[in-house]
Length: 58
View (spheres, rainbow, N blue to C red):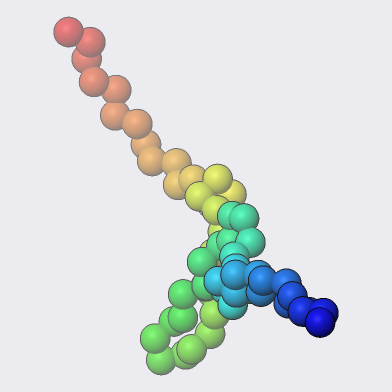
């Protein structure tokens, strides 16, 4: 008698929800327009140069 042992099925938790490393969150939707807005990393955002107020050194 030959018993055919079936291999144990791999956990499907990783297959059901494929999560890539460093996956950016879905782009926010503009209410009313429903247009996906590309989210740029904070590093690439243009910095608004505010006039620096020089405080007198004490």
